[in-house]
Image (tube, rainbow, N blue to C red; front, side, top):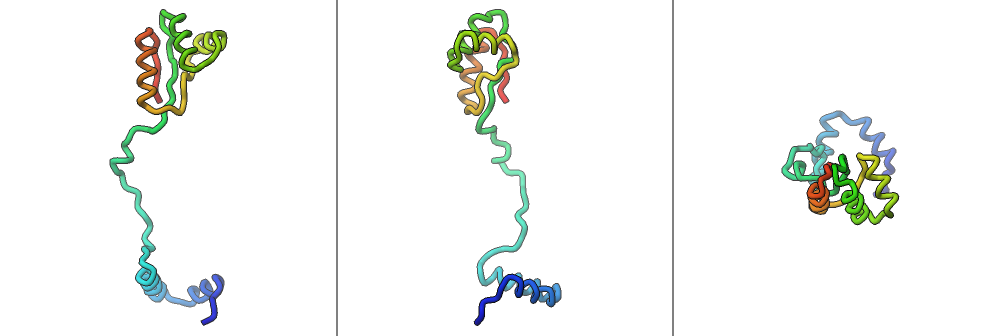
Length: 120
């Protein structure tokens, strides 16, 4: 049997009735063990899972600004002037693209030092 081109198949489909096309689809599904049905999105428990990566933002340095600058410097690895500049311009990102568990640990350090942070 000669191999049909895509255009030949399309041309033959144009000549078929909807009933014939429906029968063809069923035959293809049976022959190749596939389904032509469109997948339907449903709400699943996985859809309500917490995000895998978050961003930790400093929203208020609080009264102990020097301690926050030191902590910010320790976490980010920035130099003293860069860390001070960032803390002076709150809100500023502490870390982004981190796991929620790590963000909670770092956030606890900042809140214990008197700062306010936001995890998104």
